[in-house]
Image 1 (cartoon, rainbow, N blue to C red):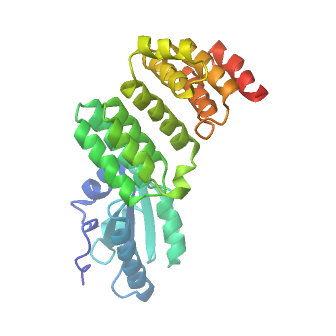
Image 2 (cartoon, helix red, strand yellow; image 1 turned 135 degrees about the vertical axis):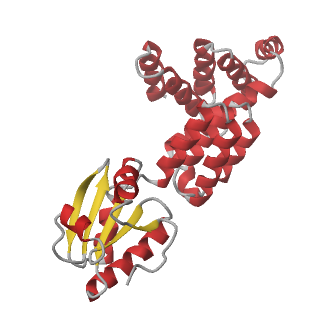
Amino acid sequence: MSAAPGPAFALEATQENFDRLVVENSRKGPVLVDFWASWAGPSLRQRELLLKLVREYEGRFLLVTVDTDRQKRIAQRFGVKSVPSCKLFRRGEPVEHVHGMQTEADYRQLIERHIVPLADKAQASALGAWRAGDQDRAIQVLAEAAMADPENPALPLLLSKLLIQAGRHDEAHAVLTAVPPKVRDHAGIQRLGTHLELIQCGRTSAPTAELETRLAGDPGDCDTRFSLAAQHLMKDDYDGALDLLADLHRRAPDYRGGLPRRAMATVLDLLGPEDERVRRYRQLLFRH
């Protein structure tokens, strides 16, 4: 009796294909080898449970079954003397061994210890496509992953950053405003939202000379002061942007829900912790 046909990521090993299915594939991701026999009741129950899990995980690990009655040489090669038994292979070698029927939770823990989270795979795939010049593919991968895992802030965060780099600011804004409430409070999401607000303000406001004239005539004009700070930031004039934002924070700390403080924190994050301006302006923020 051979294994019944299973899902796409469940395969049956023979002496001829074992190294290709297990050893080679384990260099790409986890391969769980199920040693079973048709006459052993627990062995059959284990196989059915593992088939259920491989369907659920949809390719995050590969299940390879070995009928020990038919494939005695494989069983001998790996010292399998009783069934059911499992061995998990990574990088060409067995790294975990399980003897006897286990609970579903035990099998899940075994698998989870070795699989790469879907979000990590999506980010790696998207960044690979981006570096290869395929921006649309990178954005599509992240958009699909974000829909599949809506409460993971890393996915909309990277998606928005790539959209900003591509000059697609309105789409980036739509991504950030569409995240669930639980994700909206994530510090990285909030910082990027503020950064995007600065970019959009700098893009749509009046020319710098006109803003400077307006501000000279009305120093209390908060909108003009913020727009001018945004334009300085877009020109990589961090000192000019920070001075304007610091002055706005002193004059109107509650402007647009505390936007001056958030904007200053965002600019300081861009500068990085080693920049001498970070300490100076952070002290200013704490004093007010």
